[in-house]
Image 1 (cartoon, rainbow, N blue to C red):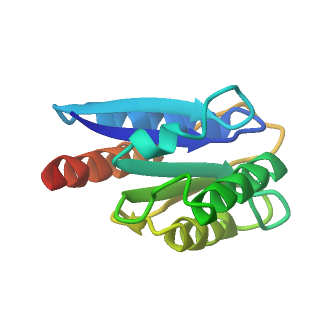
Image 2: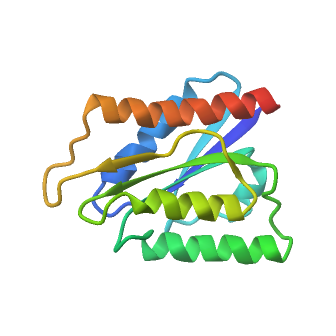
Image 3: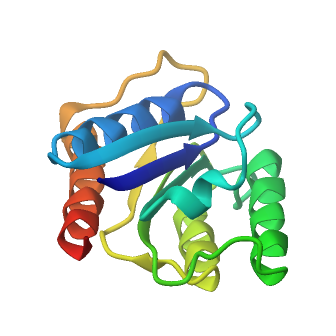
Length: 160
């Protein structure tokens, strides 16, 4: 069975809602196992070795990923360089949210994931949210998140 891992960070719950919706889309594809992991919660970095596809998500903090996501990516790079992680040939995608900094986080995540040897196979999803407002994501935005998960899961299943 093919495996998709969605790894995200979230500050206000907006990006977490996006991550859970990406998972919903991926779970619609039969024969694909989907796992949701939040940066900062305990999980083994070796989880990435067991995945066929990796999808990353982060809110934008001053035009970049959260500090926690940055540290996670730094650790992944170090493990890849020491040949403890084999990421080349895997596929994936990225998503992110932003308030006032613009959607630059998906450019950063896209560059990071490609530098790890992971091929981005679906359009990135970037969503704006209102700061200090109730977490609301319109149905069209949720549809884009589901499509990201579904597209990556279909591609990874087709690779198997």
